[in-house]
Amino acid sequence: MRAGAFAVIFDAADRVLLCHRRDIDLWNLPGGFVEDGESPWDAAVREVLEEVGLETEITRLTGLYYKPGSDEVVFNFESRVIRGTPTTSDEADAVEYFAVDALPPNTSPKQIERIADALTRLPVPYLKVQSGPSIRDLIAARGQ
Image (cartoon, rainbow, N blue to C red; front, top):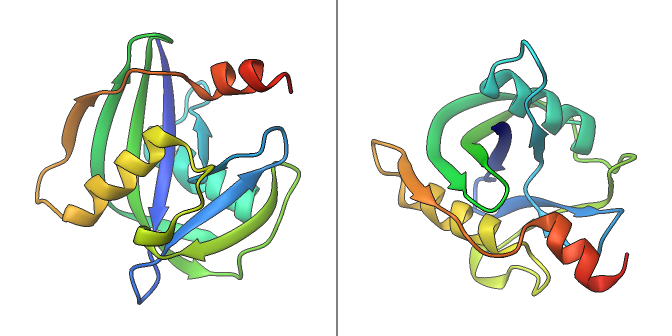
């Protein structure tokens, strides 16, 4: 089983930070796989820095998602910016804040659900199964 970690970063107007992937025409939350010997919360902080150039800190776990098709568990954290300005990287060719009701149509469906869950601001994290196509499936389907 693999683990992933993603960060939901809201600005003062509750717009969410998304990055546009270089490898496929898709917007998603900054994040990725947890490396060996790394905690999921440290992975989320590292991935945000690598993908969008922001130093962040975790404020809470918003959800834990199991993806049966790939046997992955994804930790979703709400994070706040400590310092930096959003910037592009080797993995992201665009980085923008979006109103939650105006997300780009090519936003990853699983991540839309995770953003909505984070917005509920429940005192306990969601525990959910997320089925459907993975990012790798979407890439393969588009022939990219």
